Length: 206
Ligand SMILES: Cc1cc2nc3c(=O)[nH]c(=O)nc-3n(C[C@H](O)[C@H](O)[C@H](O)COP(=O)(O)O)c2cc1C
Image (tube, rainbow, N blue to C red; front, side, top):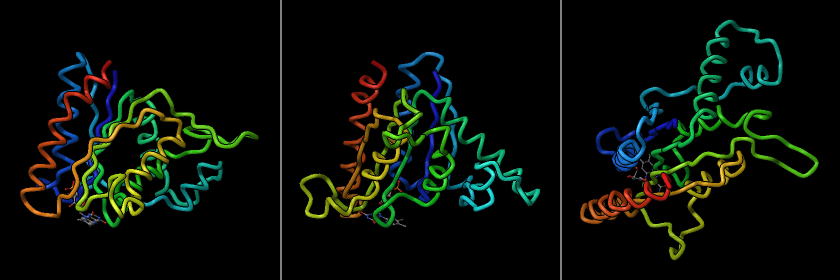
């Protein structure tokens, strides 16, 4: 079984989503003998923005610059790693109501027509189903269903939409929120999220 672990927080050792994503992967590794784990830190090893030349090459255009060959190869490796994974664990903070641009750059590499989605006369069809995506979500405020600003959440809702579009129906969230309210709330929210890891792993591994 293969697991792809991604982090995207720019806060390094102070990151909440990194702590929670690491705890999820650690528990999954304990629960799954022989689990093959691949890791990428999208903040320290970022992908460039999707370029017009790369996009055109995906449609079959012959690349004009030799430099793009490297980008095409890197993009293919990112796509293959996603397609090969049975479980994808992503540390995904809320930045400016959405996801970090580093994570968006990764999504731009895996959302590929004919590989992870297709259009038909019946509408869009996801081609990357059969995997579990687990999101370690961290955010400064509160955006749960009861929150008056629930509609400002373009982070979890976006991730659910985009993975659903790619055919992944099993998308789970482990959330630590209210992290910027104060030190006490931050500690409590991270501890609660970490406390939920074992239950989530038991479900995901079942
Ligand atoms: C650049 C930046 C933008 C942020 N934007 C938001 C935001 O729009 N809403 C929010 O609730 N918190 C926001 N925060 C707070 C983070 O969501 C919070 O610090 C969380 O801990 C980030 O996860 P991390 O610790 O894994 O990086 C922002 C933080 C940063 C660094």
